[in-house]
Amino acid sequence: MHTITLIPGDGIGPEITQAVKDIFAAAQVPVQWEEQNAGQTTFDQSGELIPQSLLDSLEKNRVALKGPITTPVGKGFRSINITLRQKYDLYQNVRPAKTTEGIESRYTGVNLVLFRENTEGLYSGLEVYDERLGIADSFNRITVAGSRKICRAAFAYAAKHGRKKVTLAHKANILKMAGKLMLDACKEAATEFPQIVFEDKIIDNMCMQLVNKPEQFDVVVTTNLFGDILSDLCAGLVGGLGVVSGANIGDDMAIFEAVHGSAPDIAGQGKANPTALLRSGLMMLHYLGEHQLADRIETALDATLKHKEQCTGDLGGKATTSEFAQAIIAKLA
Ligand code: NAD
Image (cartoon, rainbow, N blue to C red; front, top):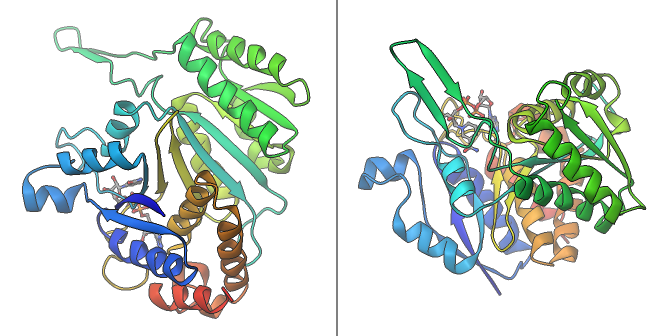
């Protein structure tokens, strides 16, 4: 039995979380949920954005599944996602993007996994503003250790999952120091995995190539800001943010999350698509070594996605969140 910290989040979070819980229960996944919330709802109730009890639960269980959290704009709150990633050194942001029958997209044959460095770069939180001069500086801190860790993680993943190629997206032609650290770290990791082809592309060319011929990419690794942008671009190649999964992984802790937001416009109406959180839950099952259960649920999900009428409105169907979940459950057998 795995004890998992479950963070339902805000907006549609509780609805999609319930759908995942129902599907896992029907598939008899050996998990015990420890529910702890964070975000706007928690703040309204207790005055705390991230309660200590959530941190205690994470530190004990080391694995969490997280719904979307509302980040109030312009109120000075640091994003909860960024806070957790940095506090626990969850340096890998892993975002698979794969075309799936039944999910509309302009492309076919996309099957890539993006590794975004998750703690450094322009998200280090190192910013200064000189009011007198009217100058704001945001520091793009890249470390040798951080670059080595993320590049090695991308190659290790490629080797473990039978993938053939790792592409580094960078801007080392302009960022002569910070960009070069990642390039050097990737070249170093490549020597350890000679069976994996290594290539590097400058980020602007990478964007063009991704929209032009995305099927050429296998595993992609990049820095924090480029990864933030590329990962949503890749989601757009395969049906959008409502269907892609994500994970924040460190050496001894992982938080799996739906990458879309809390969708306040449809919250509480039974319209939310649970696919993204479910797929993140399946990544979690693989992380926990429950490969057969993950494959079984994925097969049921893929079979359901082929029947539009059993899916939620964003996928062209009319089903509610729980009807969609029940359709998946019906196919588990
Ligand atoms: P959003 O992703 O919440 O919504 C964008 C659009 O996509 C909306 O029309 C919404 O209805 C739709 N949508 C999103 N998820 C869906 C789903 N599962 N099923 C069906 N439709 C779905 O983005 P936003 O409106 O820019 O952000 C809302 C809030 O979410 C903000 O407070 C933002 O900070 C937060 N946010 C959180 C995360 C996270 O916790 N990982 C990520 C992005 C945004």
